[in-house]
Structures are given as structure tokens and as C-alpha cells.
Length: 163
Image 1: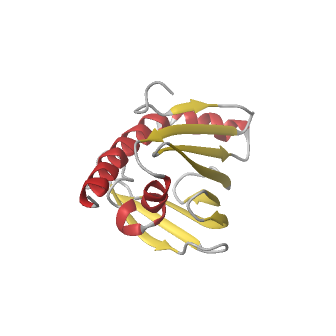
Image 2: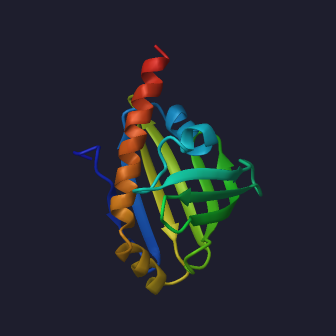
């Protein structure tokens, strides 16, 4: 990837969205930012909203529940269950948005480290092409890009504090 600050979004199948992004940090640090509530709340937000991690039980069969709050805005939430966890390398979960009937989505997120940099690939499989297309039109690419920029800043701060 030439521009590590850009989310690359592809649609390799009728029901899939694949997002890829590189981070200038080791895989362990990126994986921790993805799985520890105290770190998630520092980067996974949406414009004008902040994340509330209500539940995160990081084990196979464990559940998560996230809600984004914003002043004067309707809360947005997602619930899910972890199906596979390979520590530091891979997460597979199913999720349902509480305010948007997209049906159950399977998300596989993989983290690969090369030379101290981590490539993250998230593959989302939706129940239908129509749902996938609605998600693409929702602005998810821009929102993910903003969140990943927040994550860049967090990872830099965490790396600096470890020195």
C-alpha cells in the first residue's frame, strides 16, 4: 500500500466488504487496541459520538455490546459474539446493529506484522447483497477512515509512552 493512511475498501463477492489498513505499530499493540475496552474508547468513535463499551468478554462464545452516544443524537449500538480468537492475529465474530436491521454479519479481522508495521484486514460478510450495498452507501468508509486516524494517534502515543 502506498498510502498507509487510507482505508482500502473492496467488494470481492456479492455479500462482502473488505477493508484493509496499515498501521505504523507492532501487531500486539494494534490487537490490544482492538480488544481492550480502555483502548477502544480512545479511538473507536463516530463523528459527534463517543463509544461506551458495555460488555466485552474476549473469549470464544463471549459477547460484546458497544453503544455510541452523542449529544442530541440517537444512540447507535452493536452486539455480537466471538466465534474465533487467535491471540494477536485473528478475530471472528458475528454482529447485529441494534438500530439498523442489517441482519447478522460475520466479521473476520486479521492482523499481519511486517517490519514493525501491522496490516489489518477486516472482511465483513452480510446476509445479502442489498444489505452490503446499503452499508456501502451509509458512509462507513469515511467513518472507518476517521476512526483509524484516531487509532494512528493512539498507537503513536502508546509507543512513545513505552520508550
